[in-house]
Image (tube, rainbow, N blue to C red; front, side, top):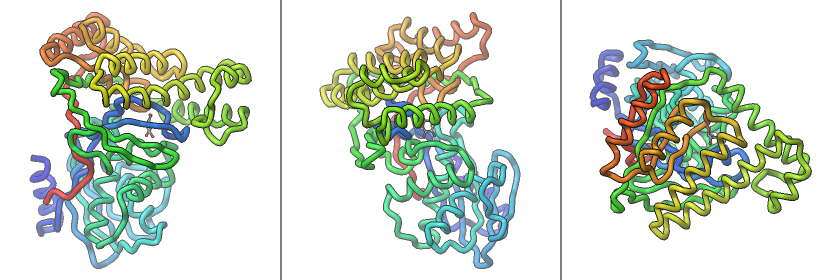
Length: 378
Ligand code: GLA
């Protein structure tokens, strides 16, 4: 449906059909939060929800970006591709800029975007756009860029052009994930592994609860967490918190706030490795326990949760979930709960009732099914 919407909007804009349609998915991080910029481990999977880009190259070196969802069109010449320029189109323009900075010849295009990744929900709506755009430009201009380098280029767009100081998690997930698998990524070595994630074979589902709470200061809080980690690594004399081997000794050297941040990162890295073992052993009770421990660590030590996500986690656990945690950058957004398939509706209903009782807006729920990464559709 969105493929056709993108094609129709492209044709309305340009008068001709697009050369193709490319897609970049949103993601859920199963476990491993805020570990990416500490050279640690993450374990995301791609969602069926994705950004769709219908596109054709242009011969005149100009760039036209259209958002179907916002009903807005922006046209830029080469000189107007400037980092820091605000607006929705910066996620597309940033990819053009990142490719050019890396020496790739991309000379102009019309790109029409539509997406069903909820905005600001911690599901990587921005990386979805970047990775779909990158896939489109790689094909339109016949570029040869291996998948890990594509993820890195999309991250350059986010960090240097859009200006958000994120790690590699989102762009790696959107680019490298495959259907029915989670992606293990070592953010230092960039080693990846496709990890079978067949929870349905075990009679389970990953229920995603979008609390629809969006934190307006999320960027500042994110940068503050990152700065605390860098300060702690400097005090400890290690290149990154990944390198902390004796947690107790490290905690003894740090001020209270940095100690809490470090305890989250170091224990979270270990939980990712433990989750890999649990998945290999089909031990979903253990996976659930690790997810819930991850949430407690984000709540108490990293201090990035808020009332609605804590309530969603507590309610899902009370309704029998094997485990539950917030996913993404924090301060609202989505919770994922590992639940028995026959408890999906009851769990969703319990969360809706708890939110109504607490005076919160109605959450949106859906099943998180591990899907394919960025690719050409048409
Ligand atoms: C956001 C960032 C990622 C990662 C997560 C937290 O999604 O874009 O790089 O840091 O937050 O795990």
